[in-house]
Length: 151
Image 1 (cartoon, rainbow, N blue to C red):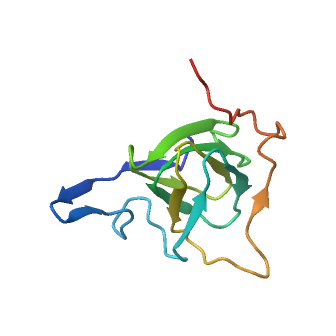
Image 2 (cartoon, helix red, strand yellow):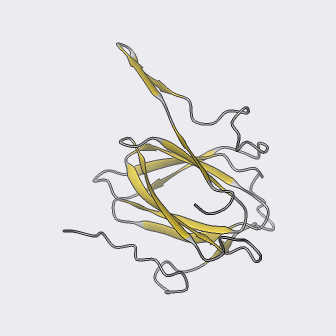
């Protein structure tokens, strides 16, 4: 596991009215501080990658559909520099993934329906000076294959 990354299995509590799932709590080990909360969607087969932040950490959960999440440690001096982690999260595997600053991350929607991802980063988005660096998901700069593996 990349140093500083944590994964929390989320508990779904169903009853006759529906279901409840806590996603992120102030008493979670990975909680640093609140910046903002937002949701983003991804259409089937679409890749949203690669991006990283220098200052903010992300806390992400997929609440509808399924996504394949990949992380790559790009932090100088990190004992896990260059390491890649992969997770499947969503309705069939509810997780909260904590992604520290300096770790490239992205996902691909693997479900036949649109995926909805909720993120609670540690910093609010700065419109004038965004804390975001991007790489093309197909450039090969990060040795990761996004395509589906059949077999």
